[in-house]
Length: 97
Image (cartoon, rainbow, N blue to C red; front, side, top):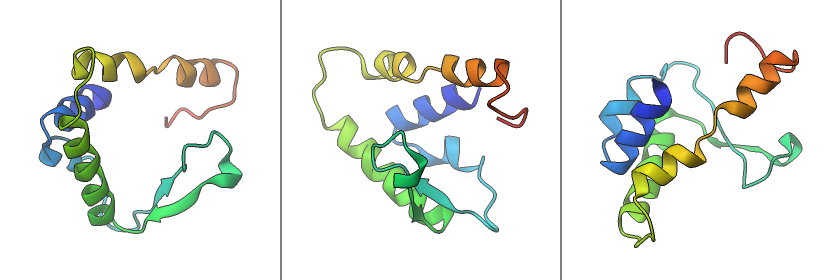
């Protein structure tokens, strides 16, 4: 459900669809800097508002880009939850994911 809301909100540039999922107090968002290695990650979003602004900027850039395929379909395909399910199945994840 969360992935669907995120993708739909992103495609429609509508933070209200996704933003309600965040707890305001104690929020800390990581910026992976395009890396799979946690050692490369940095705190990039000290507040929900900072994350929201970056998310909306990304959504606007995405909307302004011409793609060879439907953007919503491509985002669903790229958002693969299989890796999370595999990690949980092998004991490398938590039940809270």
